Length: 114
Image 1 (cartoon, rainbow, N blue to C red):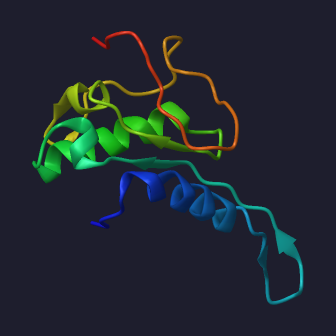
Image 2: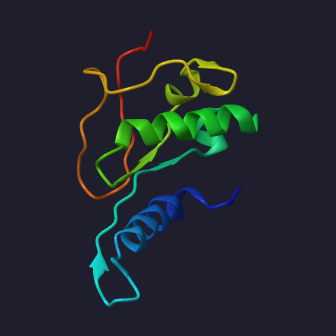
Image 3: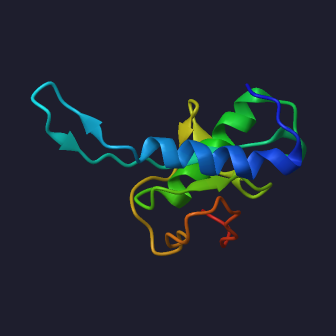
């Protein structure tokens, strides 16, 4: 867990995503492009101090931003995504998932999941 003031969260997430885009140079000198999706949750934003809920919210945010290589900040809606034994109850690509968007971290608003 990392404690960051509200005003610094987005800056740090942008920096993290930028660092994760740096190509990896292999022993033979070949550069390999990499990408990653990042989901983050702030306890004050999602309205809980329960770390398992925060982890689930960050995971749901990650899935909203996957394949985009962008950071997504969890909302209260992300904290309500159902789970079974600590894992997402819904999986795979869904039409109601938010599409990838710009390089800045952002909050996604999406319809209720069932």
